[in-house]
Length: 366
Ligand code: SF4
Image 1 (tube, helix red, strand yellow):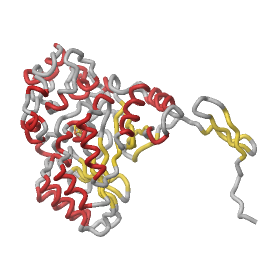
Image 2 (cartoon, rainbow, N blue to C red; image 1 turned 180 degrees about the horizontal axis):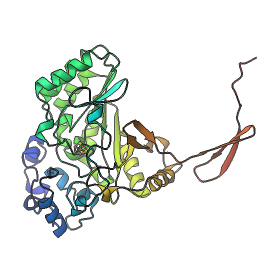
Image 3 (cartoon, rainbow, N blue to C red; image 1 turned 30 degrees about the vertical axis):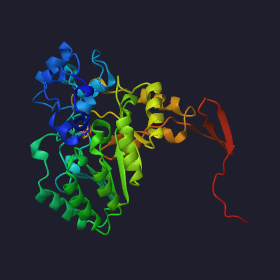
Image 4 (cartoon, protein in one colour; image 1 turned 30 degrees about the horizontal axis):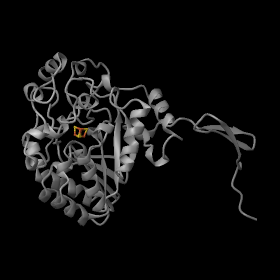
C-alpha cells in the first residue's frame, strides 16, 4: 500500500484518514514488512495500550527497517513488556486534578484534557493510562463541570487544551468549547496541545483555521520528534495555522533510537524553524510503564543539547526539561561556573573560560 494507491481527494480528507486507520498486524502489513517481534507485540499488547496509526503517518515509515524512527514511535515491540521501573502516572496527574481531566500543577494555569482520543497512539505517551480509554472520555456534562470549575477559580489565566488531542473534536465542538472559555473574563490565554499537524496534517483545514482565529490570543504547541516528520503536508498545515495568527511551538520527547543524537536533533530543530515553528521544550522521557527502551540517561541528553549550543541559531534550541509532579525542571549544562573574587566565571559553547567583572551587590546610581 502507498499514498498513490488512494484517490488524492480521499488521501487528503482527514475523516477518510480517521476511518481507515491501521488497527491490526495485518493492516500494518499493507504498509511495512512487520518483524516477528512487532507481530508478537501487537498481539501481546492489545489489552495494554491501543495500537492505531493513520495511513498518512504509516506512509512515512520505512518498509523494511523496524528501527525506522517513525515506526519505533507507533508500532508496538515486546520490549514494552519489560520495564520494572515504569509507572502508570509518573507525574501524579490524577492527584493534581480538582475536577475530572483538569490537571493543576501551577497556581495560574491548567492542562484541560478535553478529549481522550488521538489520531494515533504513541508508544511513549505520558497519558497512555487514559488515551483511547472510554472511562476517560469527557461527556458534554463533564466538560461543562470542568468549565464551571474554571469559572469559579479566578487565578486561572492560562488554559491548555490537551488530551488526547483536542483537534480530533469536530469544528463545532471545538468552537463551542473555545467560546465557553473565551467568555470567562480571567482566562487570558488559550493554548492547544496537538500532534495532528504531525500525524494527520489534513485536519488543519481552512475552516478549522477560520474557527480558531476567532478566539485569539490562542497559542499552539505541536509535537514533531524527527526530521522525517517535516513533510510538505505538515509544513502546509503549520503555514495555515501561522497565517491564522497562531504562534506555533514544538514540544518533542528525547527518545532513544528516534532523535537521541545531536545531528538528528539539529536537523529537526532547524527544519522546524524553517516552518516557523519554534522548538520550545524537549522532554526527558518519563519513568512511564512500557517505555524503558526509549529512555536516555539525562547526562547524555544534557550533552546532546550542549552540542547544539553555538552551532545553530539560539532560538532553534529547545529547553531540555524533566517534568516532575512539582513542575518542569530545566536540564541545562552548567555554563555558569561560579565566582572568583570580583569576577563571575562562565564557559563558552566551545569550552573556553571567560571571567566577567560582576558586582557583589547592586548599587544605586550616584
Ligand atoms: S498524540 Fe500525544 S496524547 Fe496522543 S498518544 Fe501521542 S503523545 Fe499521547
